[in-house]
Length: 427
Image (cartoon, rainbow, N blue to C red; front, side, top):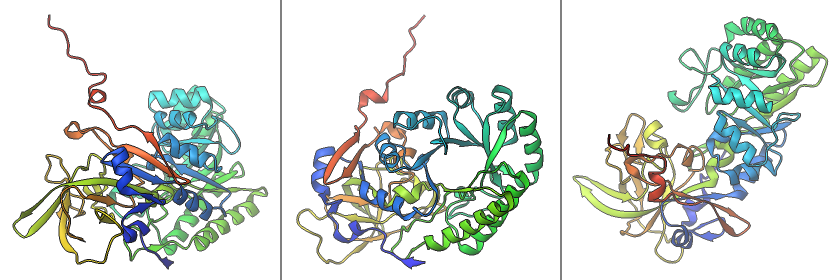
């Protein structure tokens, strides 16, 4: 592990990807999301040792982001029919070797099953019923199996995707039954996938590797690929540590090599990052619209709320943030402990909170109404979890690349809010 600063912007306070945030806010309004393409590309390069990088687009699924990673030879994971559609719109082929798109889920809703069958999308099955439903519709389809090894890991119970309290994956004790189901339908099991949650440590990772190896051996020689899943930790705080990717790869590669020796043929090794690629690339730009004291607390109230960034209210997630100076670079100045909240009619609309909803404070410079506040590490599970709660329009999204700012999603209008709604005519 090596230490890192969470975000150079928090130090400079004015520029993202070489562009002045104050000018970007004037051009695109607030709240808005900024994505630094160069950061995403650096993260892709860091994973080059793996045979294939498959982006978990649920982290940030804007078409421009999907197109960016596709052009840099990153495959894509889809967890819904809508995400398959997004991947296709971004230029991904439906079929190929390795599969450009893999549908990973615990169920087939009717739309996703239709799309997987009609377009020949590879399916990573997380339940026995998925095997039966696909087999009945399309015998001979190649699949991989997502295994729940009986244990998990995560920075929050809500992000833990393994163990008996998780809905994800095929329970490890049911693998033999699932192989019989696949054989009954003529489905070829070509790979094994294991994702047990966000964050990890190497002692725990070695257990995951061992569990995947045992599952792959049970499947047998039809296994052509294994997936390490995702969950690579992202540093949100200055003291957070970066994962040692060389050691991470070493553990998985050793697992792959042992399987190759057993099977007598090559086995490809995939990794499935989501937030690792995009979290640090994203910034939520907001404007401070009110400053007030409530007893012993000072509140900075901004025009973004949990309708824009839900992670703090969902998990008590920490995000770095800073106040942008009115003019010039940020100077060293004293800070004050403040609570940062949004505009929503909800007491929980607080960006500085801990898991369980406990309000916390953050040391930030003194500010005035009208100044910008930027929330960093917001490029994963940010916009994609947005809502129209309180009839707030979705924010705009802007991709910053090669010194240029590209509007990649326009701000939602009030007319957009009611599109599709109908007042029934009276009898």
